[in-house]
Image 1 (cartoon, rainbow, N blue to C red):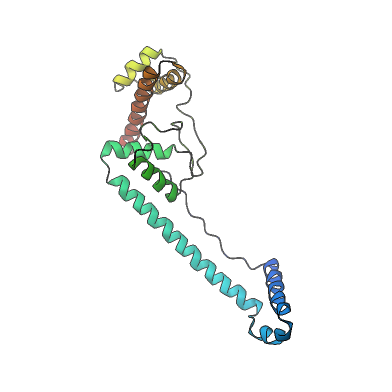
Image 2: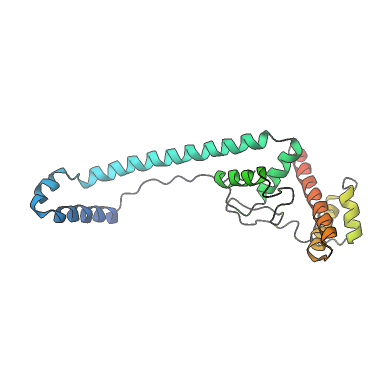
Amino acid sequence: MRFKTWPRHAFTDTSRKRAALRRKQRLEREALPLFADQIAEVQPNEDQVMQDRAIAWLKHEVRDRHEQAAKLRDARRQIDAMPTVERRAVRRAWDCAPYPADPSYLLSVLHSYAIGRINLKQPPYPLSRTDAAGTRVENLFASSSLFVTILKAREIAEDPDPYPLAERHAAYHHLQAAASKNKDRAEAAKDRVRASHLFLRFGELEDDHAT
């Protein structure tokens, strides 16, 4: 299942940050010129400020990582609680989603699915894998060099097990193409359902192969 790693960025002490700090402290003193000396006495030195910022940055980063991990655990619990077929459909749809593979986006997708706003068995985006940034990295099902007629594609969708994987891919492609061109909305919807069922079988095959 897609997941975007949370990068680590160390705090950097730069001359520009120090110059900005000196300017800030100078403006504080100039704002109250009669008390400039007293203000200067309580202003921390540059080294102390940089050290404090580094500590605060690390704490903030750790807190953010913990929050991301908690969101991911929450999403996984929701997915693991689903029936097997539904769980596979959700995981496969997420692997093709055009959103960054961030737990917040995953939770949003799960919420939309739970309230019936989207049907992840027939998601509103192409069924081809995306990377952690949501960019499509392959388009296996968008085209096929193997030709099958639409009638043959529908036949394969009804009972895909006897057919080679290449023919199933070709059937998926032609069902998707037919659905997009068919002016008969009812028949187009049926072809989309057939393509969706084929796609889910691809996922089951991959899961079986992985085990």
